Length: 297
Image (tube, rainbow, N blue to C red; front, top):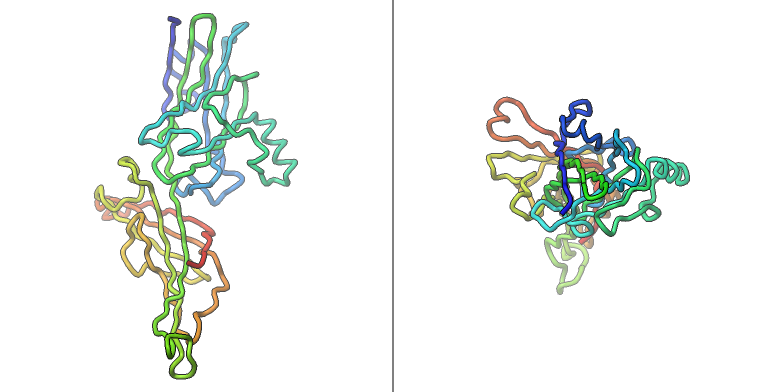
């Protein structure tokens, strides 16, 4: 059996704060978020389907002839959403290829043209700068642990890096709420015409596994939210409950048919998140999600 040397790096490590083992073996793995293409995004407001981009630096201060280098996502089935192509999709490419793809697509990245990872490991043809793109497929609290390995003879050296983030799934819709049917059960006319209103709903899913606690109201937490629709601020008509549809707006009542809905997106959903203790101290987190599509149900 070959010798394996593993050095861990926590997700908040400073690049200059390298362990003695890491310095000795010379392996270096850096992982940094890059939201330049989507300045409205941050680690607090990731949604399913979003492209979460990371700049990777993979280097070896003591490169050896014949060494094999491997970057791995370490996919596995856990409660932490680590299973590739089930919990998330991933794309891996060199920084040069990423820059070229942007230039060829007018600064709008077409993921279909990139290298979708089907397996969780990549054998590197060279070291240096790479780009990793994670696309969460389901909501939840993601806790990943990536590795950069060097294989020389019967020895394997490795450094690891944690990557933690939360993703939610947001759906919004309206329904034609028939308040009164018209005469003979049809639309009717005049005083016998049917009456309608549009009821608008939103649902925020944060995941169903035991560690998916990002927006749960238990664990001594308080969540509240407001919605900007058509440049008007609305509060929820009921208390915020994760994974449950909540009405936030009812239109005026009209006869014969419901009012037309011309604006089919929510400009902003703002969630205020805090523990009871922190709320008393004014220490809260404001999470904002933008441009949420509205569909008719």
